[in-house]
Every structure is written in structure tokens, then in C-alpha cells.
Length: 324
Length: 293
Image (cartoon, rainbow over all chains, first blue to last red; front, top):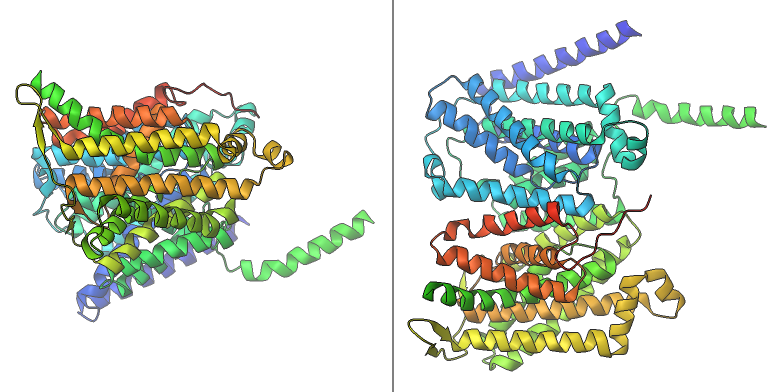
């Protein structure tokens, strides 16, 4: 069993390396034009954002709509390190992510006592407060934003950090801590009664989620040279939320599929920005009315999915036979 | 002292607009427990309808206000029927996400229709400045805003407390199932609540157009969120609470701008929200209710 799992992991790693190599080659030989490269990078950043928000919204059941705020913290934190302190890029990314994580703790501790829509409003408020503070700090450019950030993020950095994010969050979800986190989503009061320290796990999920949002922010800042407080507004949070909801709250692969799909849609509708958001909004309303669990629900995509159905049927039949 | 009084006056007129929007939030929340994110956008639609009536049809102020209110109340009912009614028995988060979707839908379809640029509202009311004492100024527009707001609030109080439909609203908000057993048509009552709330938001939209002279398709986001803060401040679901919250928030905001910190205006509103949510989640007028298992 263990060997089979290891084999599978090596196979996945090989596929990822081949994918990375082929794209890298296409970029360096100029076969892939910069527009496609930009969208690939955006796709990866969106995957990081969607998966990290899914940890909070999907796996922990704490409805947060201020994710862009943490992304902003990470972006500004990382940009300050390379631009003002002239330190290397990995230090900047680490600093941005950790700063966002610290903000995650600061925001999470007081607000996570709130439930449901009150929590949603509080996180929305925090996202706006963070943006409001950034606008008022002249050191980081105020309302005009920060420009001239060195372009240090490239395909290699973005791709492998996306892989890292998915691996860390998937492993977290499957760990003991992850199970405690999921139990809070299912029923907070019951989880508390079973001896789970709900505050601890809620803050933990919230912090990890905001940490990776900060990482995505750092990558964003170092790919696009310039960041403005307006980039990280409520609409950005909403974009990430649509990805999570559409993919399925509680499904990492669902978030990845939705992030990739929606990035493609928005690239195709780039010239019609207003129409894109009308479509997003309709998509969200229709999904909520007809398939509230999203594309994947809480299931993960795997190739077993296609074969498992027949097995399930067998199992059920056997079950009834024993029952009789 | 003069700055203080001047900002108090500005704050009251700004606050009365927040209060009008907050009333719709609080009534809808009181009856279906839904944060109707689209409410701020109905206010925006109201402003555009007012603009349409005044600038294109050439109507005077009052008929334009009425037109905006009537059309928006229908819009509110349609939104409720199409988007929220199918979700009445689903988890609250589902309805919240839908509301965010409706909000964006209104904003960006409006942007497709009227183009994103800012439009200047025609000067339908002549503006007269009254000097009180010293350099404190009250404009006739501010007075009209206050008068219209107070009239609408009194009308609302009358509807909620003296009419049959108001009684039904209070009953449904208290206990939906029991109300149904007593023969109240819950669906109609909810529809009516959305209609009234949307009409009030539309009135606020027209008033803002007159006050600030400028409207754009995204103008609903911030006032919508702030009106929500006002509703939470007063205690969501409580009508006098929403009025008080709206006026308080307007005054605080005017003070912050008046003392030269206008860039901190928006964060301050949200700081108030967070403090209220943490210290007294039921709001100033609310009572704490224990959650049952």
C-alpha cells in the first residue's frame, strides 16, 4: 500500500516536471507569446489564492470575504523588502507571506468568535480597513501605489510555489489537524463537545490561508512591477470567492479547476470587462440556485472517480444481501 | 466649535441617506435573515432612474422621486422572486453568496447599459445657502434631504405599526411558521418588505444625486456597505436602530472629514463595525440571544 502511494507520488512529480520543462522551453524559445505566459502566471496565482481561501471557507466553514486584503499585505510586504531593503527575492516572498500570516492571526483571533454572515461582514470590513490603511501610508506610495518593483517572479518560481501551496494545504487537510478543522465545518458545537479546541483550529486555518494569500500577493507584485491599493479591493476578493464556490467548497482539485477555467474565461473576455463580471455574477447566482455545492462538492478529482461508481453499487447490493 | 456644528449639519444630511438605505437592510434581515448585498445597488439604480426622469424626461423633483421609488420597488420584488425565493430553505451562506452575485450583476449590467463614466446630475432644485451664525451654512438641499427622509421614516413607522401588512411583517419577522399557521401569506409579506426597502433605497439614491451632483454605476458599493454598518450598529432587524445607526455613522464620517482626515473616512466606518461586532454583536438597541443547539 505504502509503495503504491509512493509510486503515485513519483508519477505526479514526473508529470509536473515534464509540464514545467515543456512550458519553460516554450517560453525561452519564444514559442509561447508573452500574453499566454502572463495568463499562465495569473492562473497559478489564482490557484494559490483559491486553494488558500478554500481552506478557510471550504474546509473550516468560516465564511471569509476579505482575502484580497491579505494578498495586499503580502504584496506590499514583499515589495518593500526587494524595493526598499534590497534583499533577495526568496526573503521578500517569505516576509510577505509571514506578514500576511501575522495579520491573519490578528484578524482571526477577535473575529472568529463570530458566526456565518457576521464573520463574512467582519472579514469584508478588515479587507477594506487594510486597503484604507495602505492608501494612507505615504512610505508605500499611498493611493498611487508602488511601482518599479523588480520583476523577479518568473514561470519557475510561480509554478513551483503553486505546487508547494497545493501540497502543503492538501497535506494539512489530510492530517489530524485538518480533520479537526473539517469537524468544525460540520458542526462547531459538536466538535467543541468532542474536545476539539475550536478557536485554535479556526485561527490555524485562517492563518495558513492568509499566509498563502500573502505569498500570492508577493508573486503578483514581483510579476507586474507595480501594485495599487485599488487592485486589492472587494472585487478581487469576490473573484477568488467565485473560484472557491464554483469549484466546490471543500475540494482542492475543484478550486484548481475553477481557477484555471475562470482565468481562461476572463482572458477571453478581457476587452469586455463589464460583460465578464455580468457573466461571473450570473454564473454565481445560477450555481447557487441549481448546484450550491459547486462543481466538485467536497469530493476530490481523481481517476478513480470514474471507476468507483460501479464498486459503490456492488457494495450497496452486498449490504442489502447481508441485511436480508 | 464652528467646524463642529458645520460638520454636525453635514453629518446629519449624509446620515439621513445612510439611514434610508439601512432601513431596507434591516427590514429584509429582520424578515428573511439575509444580508441583501444587492441593496446598495438598488440605491444606484434609483439614482439613475432619478437622473433619467429629471434629465431626459424633464420631470420635476417629486414625480422623479416617485418614479424611482416605484420602479425600484418592483425591481426589489423581482430580485426576491428570481434569486432569493428558490433559496429560502438553503443554508444562509448560500443566500449570502447569491446576494453578492446579484449585487455584481446589477452593477455591471448597469455599466453595460449606461457606460461606466460619471454623470452629473441636473440641478433640479435651486440651491440656497442659509447663514446661521458665524460661518455655519445650511443649504436648502440639505434641508430638503432631511425633510424627505423624515417624511419617509414617519410613513414607514405608520405602515409597520398601524396597517395590516405592517402587522403581518412584524409577525413574520417574529416567527415565520407561526405566522403562516395564523393565515398570513408569508411570500407576499416578504415581497412587500423587499418592495418597501427598495423604494427607500431608491429615494436615497435620488437624494444623493441631488446632494453630490454625480452618479456612476459603482456608486452603490461603499454607501451600501456603510448602510449595512449602520444597520449593524443600531442592531440589525430593529427599525429605530437603523435610523440611529445611520445618523450616527453619517455624523462620525463628517467629523472625520471635517477635521482633515478625509482619507480615513472609509476605514473608520469599518473599524466601528468591527468594534460593534466584537463588543456588542446585537447592536446598540439589540438584546443578546443565546444560540440554541
